[in-house]
Amino acid sequence: MDPGDLLELLKRRTGFTQAHAALLRELGEVMTPIAPEVALAFYDYLGRDGELAGILHAVPGRVERLYGTFARWYAELFGGTYDRAYAERRRRIGLVHAKLGIGPRAMVPAMGIVQELSLEHLRTALRGPEVFSAVEAFEKILAIELGLIEESYLEALSLGLSLGYRELRQALAEGAAALLSS
Image 1 (cartoon, one colour):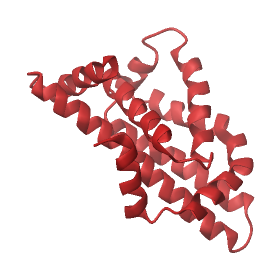
Image 2 (spheres, helix red, strand yellow; image 1 turned 180 degrees about the horizontal axis):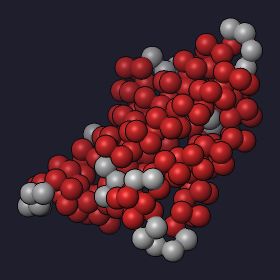
Image 3 (cartoon, rainbow, N blue to C red; image 1 turned 90 degrees about the vertical axis):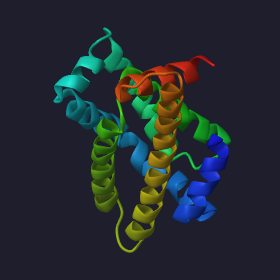
Image 4 (cartoon, rainbow, N blue to C red; image 1 turned 180 degrees about the vertical axis):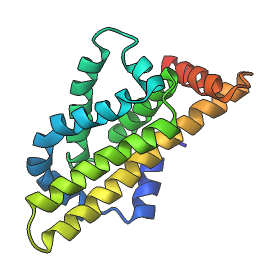
């Protein structure tokens, strides 16, 4: 499915509105400063898994580079602009992860770390009933994120299988590589 069309479908299914987008943009002032802390916890979590640590450290300087990439991604969560370009960037994120061998069973739990730390920060940074709408907006954009990235995994896997790869991990990686090069 076209990433922009998928984004619109996910917005409808989650009930994500312009009011949520505006609130997320406002929350950016409170949330983007914690990106380094969230990134540290995220990559610490991944680094404790032998398989994922191997991927992270396979290329010298990769982890350090990923901290900057993570900070940009995290800031976009609170950017307030959720359009076709946003959806295409999420598709690419999923494809790059798939190409490297980082599948949904690694990505989804890691997103839980992002969710946990972000919600904890929201609860301490905001006071009163405003926290409820902030949590709602954040949960909706995370659901959309996961939907966009997961769809890219399905797209890559489908292509990899159609190219003749039968082992799922290899089909995922090869399909993603083909999609990234096209």
